[in-house]
Length: 219
Image (cartoon, rainbow, N blue to C red):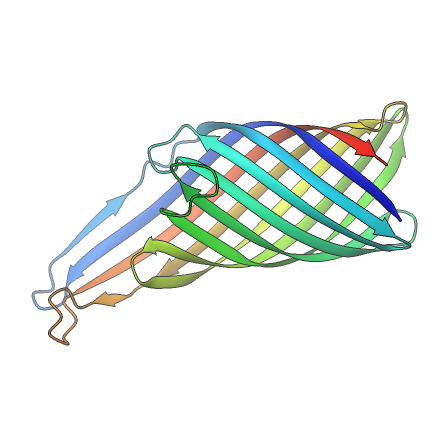
């Protein structure tokens, strides 16, 4: 078996685009609000530990991100991944991810996202003095805590490319793009009389662009 660990800083951009319409079910009156969809700066840290035996591999990663946004404070992601190497360069993988947003690391008071993902990747492709890799994944997540009492589907994509010098493969740069989207239309009984009072129709989209430097330890 082989083992490796990695750690490195992350910088990037974050965007949230959300719309919510609140309708009074007795009067039909409604009001709509929308977030500021500007891109905000973000920085953080990523760390991971992986192992392999034959063509099988596994990995656990923790990603922390501090976003300069009124809509999002601190975000922490924990990812468990397992996969299989196909030939010299290709791989297929699946895993589980939990994302938490709150006022500190591992806090989910504002947002609690979790679900499985599947994907494929290519790595170790030599282009002159550089080793390149890329991967793509699709996420089947659900979100809690965004609308009280409502849990909704939050599916998305993740695309990543990486590059490392052949002479020093322990140093790498990784560029990743992620985008998630979900919506819902729950009713709420505000006074507890058994009759719904309001409807909240919402749509939420989050996008991330992250550049990470990683240093790997192989042992």
